[in-house]
Image 1 (cartoon, rainbow, N blue to C red):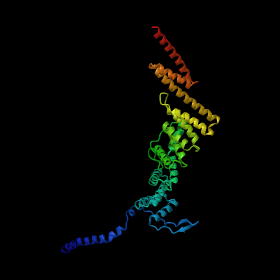
Image 2 (cartoon, rainbow, N blue to C red):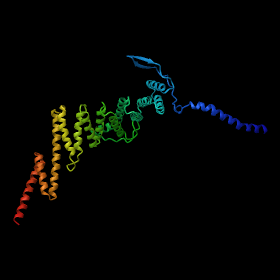
Image 3 (cartoon, rainbow, N blue to C red):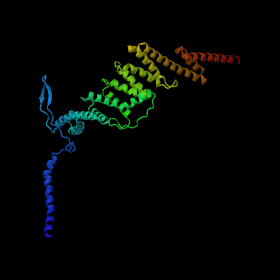
Length: 374
């Protein structure tokens, strides 16, 4: 009993000595152990390769950055990517991006984000890659990787629009199409695949509105809206394409679709016909600026379009005259009938206006004679 009691008395003292030892020696070791080491993925990194630098007119080989440094680990992760070990490369690049952001190294942070997106893209994990590319361009709007990132974003959007193209094909062939509410493929978002694809295309256009892929982005956005009968949005993007990129191969078809979208955006003669006037103006622009639209087939199409616009505007003005006639305002009605007769000669509305003018004239003469001879 006595020996046990003495041993128990010595335990607090030994515990105290152990704690003091840890406080002296353990803290020194922990001070050299950064938080990033806790998050470091368990991936064996190959040694960083030597780097080649173009200097004084020729390439020179420089020693590789030391392993364990941010630059060294980034070079090692690129080796993983080149070997096709995309999953391991993704883990390392994600860790290096967070580490570079904490250490405030913008150049390596930008490069790590780019290669992180490339690793995700190579695995066809397009939702994650799209989020990474967006993060890169949000942080670095003038990134040196901007052209490559925009090209990747357009590729991702094209993949996601496969669902919409399937629906278009089914509708054109007269087949029933059952819409997909959910996508369980790794390369597509779970829901809202079309809207997210349009969002990526719009962001890609805004990131480089004068770049080589800008007309393609506008054309895809406009085409989807045209298919969905969102006429104002389709008109906006088609018109923007034709005005901003007149030399693009897509400009001519965009101009024709913009005219059709403007006409379709006016449901009937009782609505504002500003879009009809804009469509008429675009027809004249098409004839003036694009010689390829002067062939007989295109000429006939544009002439038919102008005639349809002319007829709808005549109907609108005739309906205004009819409204004034029904509400007992013959003077105003007479003015609009005369306007229709002169402005839209040769149309059926001009003929009806002429009949109404004769009726109003006879009614006015009858009323006048009744007042003269009460």
